[in-house]
Image: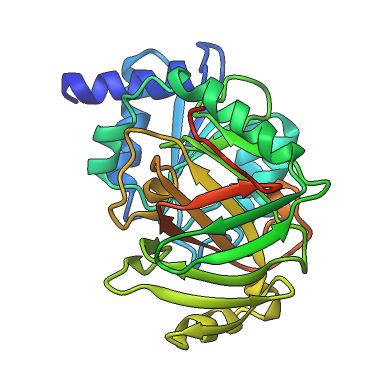
Length: 310
């Protein structure tokens, strides 16, 4: 392990996760990400922490539940890193572990390049801005989003809480992504209407060569161009056509590269998601959670332009 790798591991374990010497640290991974996951496992050992790494067969889609053994192991740890090809963020297993008090960070499908560029960052520098923006989402009743690519959509968030993903998970039950730096909210079911033009990236599809357009009525995708996107959602049931998340990127170190984990955190981007949202205040239960990222949105909260950083 070189000096930069050691610095990144130390930053993640101590500054982001708040790992203490007496605590149990677990890394959950699969074959694809085992080498990166082992960097954190081995690094934890070099720093004097008791660490365990477990590798399992990757799930088929983001949001699919892990094996029962993994569920049980999550509940036995104090701090967990999830370096898996398919995200466990929106699973009942992750939610149960968070409720139990486990501190967790999810790094789905992360690459070494993203690790080396974004995980040495001092996330305390964006914590205030992230929390402030989340509070604005909580106070809002209606959100409208437009882009030059053609997005024009609005939805209610009455009674919904804005969540901040700061990258600082030192307190009991805290959970988020690494890299971090976004805020999100679950739109009120059945209220979203308009058009979303996805011009950056989509989970499992990567960076888009051409924009993909979806038409939304009563909170559901009713049409897509190309048609294959709606058909893909339909494979997992009608619930997967729900607009279940709206998020805003705030991380100046994140770039839009085609890796949605990073793309959705990029400053100047926003994202919508389709599928399940029971893990952050919504009511839609579905077997998948698919994020889609847009460039340069104009965001209005109750008719007022949201000034990121202002």
